[in-house]
Image (tube, rainbow, N blue to C red; front, side):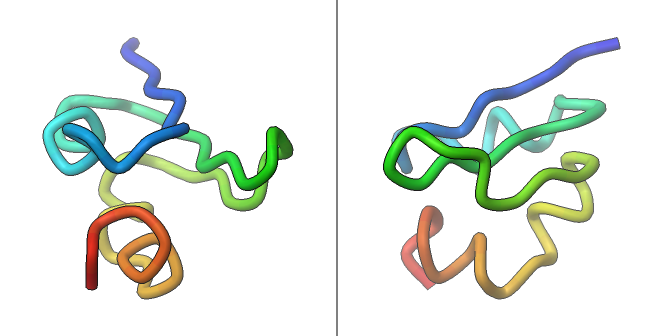
Length: 52
């Protein structure tokens, strides 16, 4: 089982691609959590971390 803590947009898409579960941090707090696939599809994650 692989996890990914997303605290920076650098390589976030790659990290979420292999993660079983991930967390998106905003100001040091967990803002969004889910499977890597869920986070990649989440528009809020895209806006905050993936440049979209």
